[in-house]
Length: 213
Image (cartoon, rainbow, N blue to C red):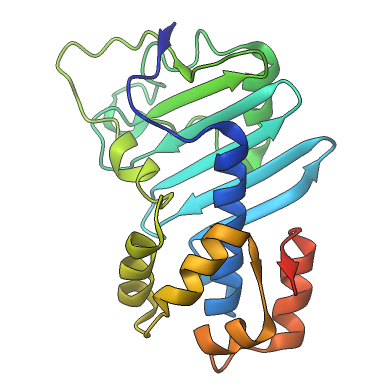
């Protein structure tokens, strides 16, 4: 196996950021099927689930377990997609070296294990993210820059995306507060989305473990 060659979040920071992004979607969009981010802190016993999907066939699944974290990405336009291969096979090296306890997390049908163009993981005792020794001499794009880039690292990038996606004005000040404090007030919710149903949104936020003050 190899060390993941690019900068990425520490596991707890990753979980917190995915929680925040899911909370933002709950406030900005009442139609859950239109949301990009999903977060479930009790997906399975001792397992937290997160999903990032652009609605165009590209997605990330991130699973947090006591054994560690696994990230599975699928870029449907990548030449490394199983759909681009004659035998519809997972690209060599993606899964072979994943620790079994983490690989087993991908067996649920909802995670679509076979739809994959890259995978990285971090066991609970690891200090770096790891990936398989993937055979890719041509340097084909596995979609990781594109997909991992949807986990926004700063409020400005998120606001730029959200305004384009939801076609509304999004307060950078409010988003910056939420990114820093991992909490939101009812007043902030109304400022972000004057049409939000506060009662429903608060219930959804509480269900994912997000703080409403």
